[in-house]
Amino acid sequence: MFSYPQTKEAMTVGIPDTYLGESIKSFIVPKDNEVIDINELKHFVLDRLGDFKCPNEFKIVDDIPKGPSGKLLRRKLREMDK
Figure 1 (cartoon, rainbow, N blue to C red):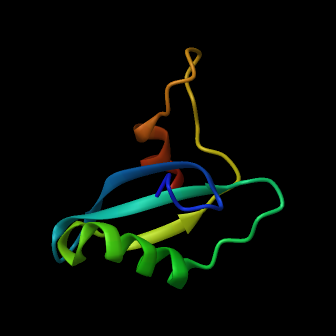
Figure 2: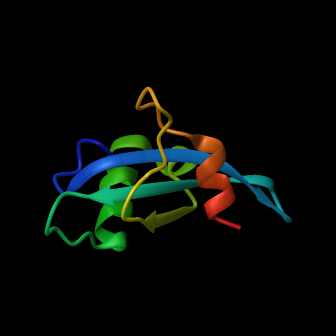
């Protein structure tokens, strides 16, 4: 997802799923003034990773939570998704 031209930041996490137990969801921060088409992004990822590695869901967000050191916080993303 980082190689997608309109992506500024991205983080992929496992989220609870009633059917699968856990599914893959990617949170994407677009570059300034860019619009990301989710379908186009999904095809971009499918072409590079294959179906079984592609996230089940994509969500466009304004920011990804970071700790004091700048590290992206997966736990906070999971909480945001509830």
